[in-house]
Length: 263
Image (cartoon, rainbow, N blue to C red; front, side, top):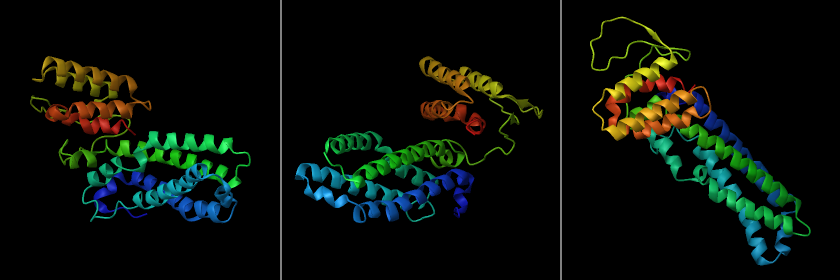
């Protein structure tokens, strides 16, 4: 799928969202209508109203979710709706992707009801499986959105970093110079991942931040250092960026290097 030019820095993750959207489209166009109209779903209309209504809601909620996410995940090229990258990413905050708890409670309730039926329609059992699969897909969407919130494009749109992005960052090492209140002596060096955290801690320690705020940020840097290379690094990085938002001038020089560690 083509990606609009101003979003191409995040192309790989947007392609992932588009792929998930295609799967939601298949479920919406094929799976849900087939189960309702071509299998034994009609048996639910023989049940008492209070039971029938919940099973009808299983179909309605499941297909509504599939239909909405099918378009939403592939609609990032719509400049009218999403003039900026941040507009698109933030639009997920109110919607299916972040209704995890409510959707899980609903599925648990419907599953218990279905298991209590003496002759459960086969279509209902299959709809429950499809709904569970959609929850798994939504978890993938949430994870991808969280990664996109740490991208340079998103941080620029939110005013957290400047437009300039160093081109000398590689995934194995961080190269280039970081100068904090010092003179650039024009000596290139290669810093290990540990050096990045050391320099960041030094910049925070030497800043004019209040003692409590300084301590909290230093503790978060330590957590990032400990979690680098693990699945938990994304969360610790996000927490750090959120808490450092009011002191972005101190930490901004290090954000591109930290973002590179997400890969």
